[in-house]
Length: 157
Image (cartoon, rainbow, N blue to C red; front, side):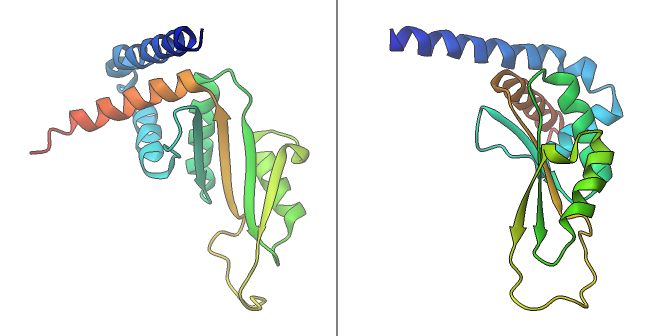
């Protein structure tokens, strides 16, 4: 039974990948879609075939990613923010909740300890580093097809 299930899910993953390859040319006509794929190539988590995740501190990069993650996955999106211990967690959660139109309670936080006192530090990532993720194997397979299609289009020799 295990081998049959393994084969069944491999066929579903392969079908999703093939759908991604089939839809790539049309989707890449959108500059925003192409930008999302480049963002994912640079900032996305690619170590698991079951997870789509983007982390950054730039709200525009994350809003673009959020838009396409919501478009291509019907799975629940998860939000998390990594921030320094001396940053205001409430204000940061409020900021990201407004950016993504989600409840503050839907945003998990992880504190990063500072090696020294940073009271006078100018924050490069004022609102922490935010991560948006979903556990959607079939979206991840389509995304892999789009990543492959993009890189194949570069014709580098």
